[in-house]
Length: 427
Image (cartoon, rainbow, N blue to C red; front, side, top):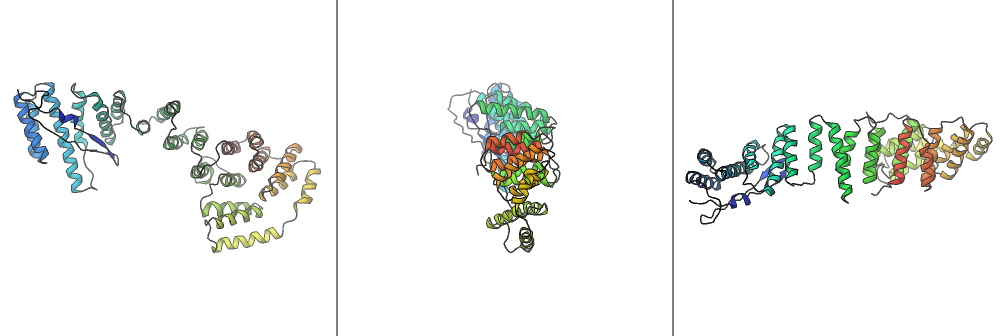
């Protein structure tokens, strides 16, 4: 009985994914005298005809030969090579279609049947089955068959297949099937597994968790903090600040004083990024009666090239800021009066003026007096006491002040400031 080369499958390399689509490029070799699995005579004849036609990209002839092979197949080996050749033919069709029009969509669903046959075959090497099951899962995913996708991908894992994005892809499928909680549970497990293995989870995993966590009660802030602790970049700090309280539909609804403190956090983490950030921060502080801070932020924005020096709007703002500063009274007399006042209101107001001037030592002193005398918004005062201390590098003092903040949303804002103490910006 004649034989057909077993190199057919060993050379069948499913080589990856491009743009979410499978690009499979097998190579087939045939050595007539090579020892290997034996096919029944009718099956061998059809297989050889199919292989020759596939090599010539004559897919019509190959299809006829493969139909004959399916009919003639009597053994596991016959069926194994029938599936392998059909997979090769379909891969050839995809390759030719892409060469003819690289930008046109290509139907890859016809890869499913031969892959299923090879996965079921006892002759398919287990080392190949993992990759085949993964690709078969991709086909199911593209068809929006999410339970089948998970089935094939779990099978791929059982065969030992691994891919850097495997876990994330599994989570996405669970979410798209409606199981958001299951996806987040898988994410937590993946983060723990990766960390336990001495590896650092990818930033994409944390961003995935944040994007889903903000839709779950009480999960937004923890996911923000996890991302920032793992990847404390200026970009991530800005993204979190905007997501938390500066965009339409943000996690928290902040009033102007709270937004100013959020902008101060962005300044502290070097995450002010563009004209809007600098301009909005300056405008809010100016409107709040803090012209020194507004002037400093505008000047920083211009020096950083984020605000055009010739911009009429900002030149007009600078003029108004200059007038306001010229009309300000010295803080010394207010400080003296605040220290002898019956409550802490004037001390808190004077401390705010010092904070806006970046005189953080004086600001911290007066904030503490305000808290001692009372009759002030303790959550606001503690937030700003923490800011003054953080600016001075007193991390433990700042942490204690931020920890004392209890009200909503200031408590969350204070927690973000604490995160900035634990995860200083890296770039």
